[in-house]
Structures are given as structure tokens and as C-alpha cells.
Image (cartoon, rainbow, N blue to C red; front, side):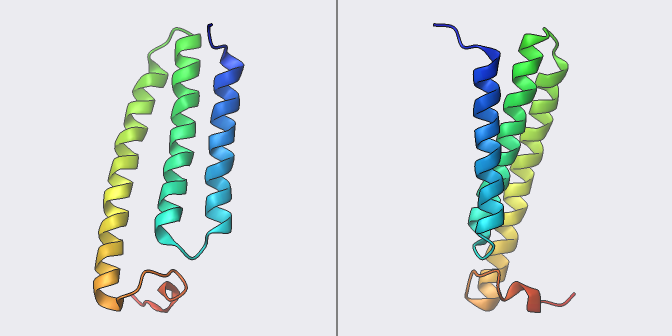
Amino acid sequence: MELQIYQFIILSTLLFLIGLWGIIVSRINFIIILMSIELLLFAININFVTFSIYLVDMVGIVIALFILTIAAAESAIGLAVLIVYYRVRSVVSLTSVTSLKA
């Protein structure tokens, strides 16, 4: 059974909507927001790779590799900020983040 292009597009759309829903609904938990951003980036990668294979072009795969690199850096920096914030405040909640000053 061969997978068609529309199946990948439906999968990508569902992942994107789940990630968007996670960002909109869960405004208090920083870890869920980070995971939702990762889902958004993964959905975009699926689209790039799908159309790259469909159009027989390597540009989409190269862009997907760059997006994976950016996603890894975003996760590392986000978790580092979360750890420092937890050490200072002893709580991981985005409701009190608005009280931080530069």
C-alpha cells in the first residue's frame, strides 16, 4: 500500500492544529507550550519533505534539516531558561512570568 500525498498533508495539518491548540489553550504551562511549538515545526517539516519528494527537489529536505536544527536550539534554550527560572522562583508557572523585569 503506497501512501498518497494528500495523506501526508492531512497528517501535517492535524499535527499543526494540535500544536496550535496546545499553544492557545495551555497558557500556563511552559513545557506544554514548548512541546506545542515542536509539533508546529514538525508539521512544517512534514510538508517540506513531502513536497520535496513529490517535486523531486532537494531544497525542501535541506530546509527541513535547518528547521530541525532551529527546533533543537529552541528546545535547549527554552529548557535552560525554565531551569534558571525554577531555581529563582521555585515554581514553573507562566502566570508569574509577567512580573519579571529586565
